Length: 217
Image (spheres, rainbow, N blue to C red):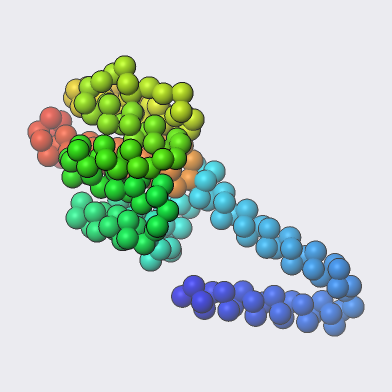
């Protein structure tokens, strides 16, 4: 599918180039037009991935790119079972060799499996800020170490409220959890916002499964 789309795109460019040439348009102008088209496409991709608040656009992107490991994990978070999420994360862990990516997803997997020991090992090996500090503060929140769940290294505005939402979750403070989860989601953009929406939703579903909050009727 991706090859077919690229082939179609290049065919359109070639046809457009021939048309402009026949119309007597100078080569420099044609190249400028092609550059503008390419820049517009790149900007659209960046906007959807990192800047938009439109989750319908992000959801469509995730669905269209779910054969790629990172987006497969996001798709599983939105539409799959817990086991499907873990399977998708395993693919990322084995696919990417960069330590920051590999150990960040090992950390996520350990958290999902309630394995704090493995989470601590993975967090120590991420070695890239702000991911390392986020993982360490996340663990501190799970363990109730409130003095250690804040850090100046949490440079992304969604991170601190996300960590504090985790702590509120551990003490079953539903109102505080919702307040902080919403604050974190509001600060995030693009695929990060999409991921947070579904992660916090899963946490609330755990409350339902444990009988802490009533199941919707």
